[in-house]
Amino acid sequence: MKLYLAHPILDRDWVRIEELKMEKEFDIELVNPFYDAAERKDIQDIDSGKKGINDPNLNAKKIVEGDLKAIDNADGIVALVTEKASVGVYCEIFYNSHVLKRPTYLIITDPSKFTHPWLVYYGSKRFHSLDEFKEWLK
Image 1 (cartoon, one colour):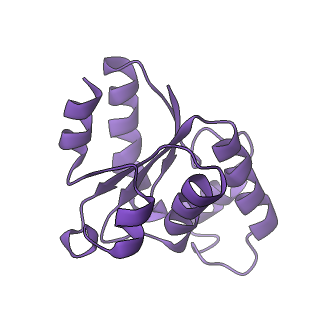
Image 2 (cartoon, rainbow, N blue to C red; image 1 turned 135 degrees about the horizontal axis):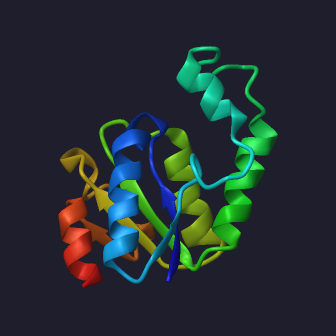
C-alpha cells in the first residue's frame, strides 16, 4: 500500500523518524512531501533560515502541484492532525477524500479536533495516536 503522508511542516523532523520505522515494520510505502520530493530546495531554505514557512518568495505553484501529483500517485493518504496542523494538511485531506474519493486515514492527536464534523466526514478511519494507527496496520 502506498500512502501520501500529509503532516505539518513543523512536525516533519519527528514524523520522518516514525515514517522510516513504519516502512521497515509494515508493508507500506509512505510518500513524504518534505523528503521524498526530488526538488524541495524550499525545505533547505527554510531549515537554513533563508525563508520562513509562509515566505512570499516560496514557489506556491510548484509546492502545491507537486503535492497534488504525489497524492494522485498514491493509493490514499494518512494525515497527521496535530496541534501544529497547517492549511496544507486540511487541503490534502479534502483533495484526497472529496475529489479522488480514496482512503483517508486520519491520525488526530489534537483532542479538540477528533470529532470535528469535517474530519469525521472525510476520514475513512480516524485514530487518536500514531500507536493506534500502527496497531491497525498489523
